[in-house]
Length: 150
Image 1 (cartoon, rainbow, N blue to C red):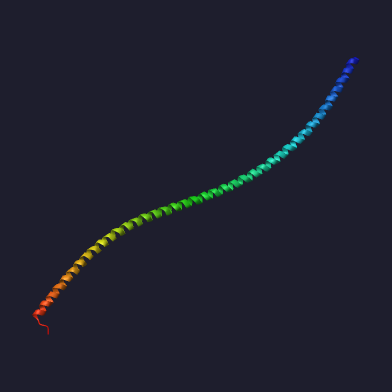
Image 2: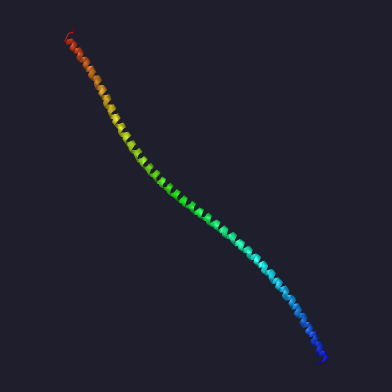
């Protein structure tokens, strides 16, 4: 081999060693960077786990709130049913009262007519009694004239 070739080989060998050294440094930096990224990923993963726990807790709270709303809705449903029942009973009672009131009015009108009839009869009876009294007075006068008073 010629000196030029040897020199060229030495240069190439030096370049290869320098590249190998540079690659070693790059491998080391890459490894360090990978470790750093891995640590950040672990931290992020831990944060995501914490967020997941928080979301699970919030979800559980929403579940409890949802159950409470369902319970409140059920109570409102029962209250609505009770109000409907009371409303129906009040409506029925109002209808019955209205019928009873109409019947009372009819009865009072009948009583009023009876009282008017009785009043007419009593007035007629009173007038007849006045006539009878006058007749009795006349009869008494006639009797006194016929039978002297002793």
